[in-house]
Structure formats: structure tokens, C-alpha cells
Amino acid sequence: MDALAELRAIYKEVDAVLDGFTCDASSDCCHFARTGREPYPSAIEIAELARAVRARGGAPKKSKRALAMADERRCVLLGEDGKCSVYASRPFGCRTFFCERGHGPVGEAPPPLKGGDLGRLGRAIADLSARFDPHDPGPRPLSKVTARPGWESRGR
Ligand code: SF4
Image 1 (cartoon, rainbow, N blue to C red):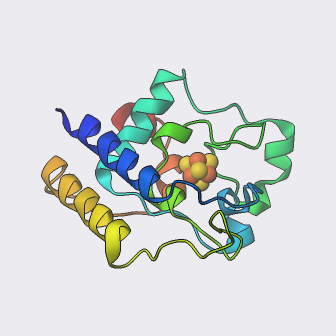
Image 2: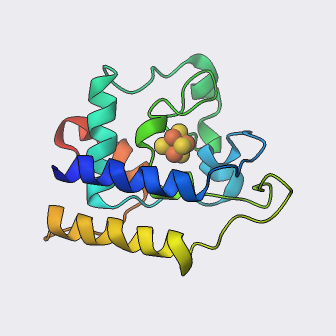
């Protein structure tokens, strides 16, 4: 299995752990100025995002609406429909980016990021990234990566 396929298999495990958990799908967490936070994907997660962007023929076009919302620091991968354009490849941070609105089927809080299954899977992604890019495996702000012209061609 190549490294990206291995990553997608870990993402499936993450999704299984979080099966049944949801939020109000406001996409607030994809507007980084709204939350004051953003995902920090590792090198291998960025390579998977780049693969997914290339597969769909590029990042979503910047509409007038998106440009008007520039001060909200809207993720460039958020589609005009308010949905992630690379949902199946979104990073661990996006899969687990719960705010206080995240909840389970009977209103329970999401599982913790540290310890437990999510902690183990987060470490598995970090280990995989270290093997994938031993020189620069670590996490970095998604907005900085996607601000670089042609990042999806290089995967960095
Ligand atoms: S990658 Fe997708 S889910 Fe993550 S912040 Fe961007 S649009 Fe939102």
C-alpha cells in the first residue's frame, strides 16, 4: 500500500471512531477568522489534499461571494455550496475539529483528541508523515500552504 493509501485507511478508522457524531454543519470552522483556529495538516496530509485537488481539476473558483468574505479567512477548499470540495481527503484536524456544537447521537461530547483511539490515530498519521517526508514531516497552517501558488502541483 502506498503512503497516501495508508493515510486514507487511517482516515477511515478516524471516521469509524466518530461515526454518529455531528455538528450543525455551519462551516464556521472553515472560516478561520470566525473561530480563530485553523487545521495544521502534516506533510502527508497536504500531499493527499493536493492529490484530491488535482483529481477534481483544481481548487474551487473564487466567487464574488468568497472574495467578499476574504476577511473571514475562508478556506480556499470550501466550495461555493458551503461544503468541503475535498471532503474525503480532508485532514485529521478537519475531521476532529469539533467546536462546542459537536455532539453524538444522544448529545454526548465527542471523544477526546488526546489518548484513546483518536490519540492513537493522530500518532499513526504523524508517524506516517515522518516516513513520507523525513526532512519536513510536521504540521503547518493550512492557510499558509494553500496561499502558495501551485501548491497542489508540488503537494507542499
Ligand atoms: S479542508 Fe475542507 S473541511 Fe478543512 S477547513 Fe478546508 S474546506 Fe473546511
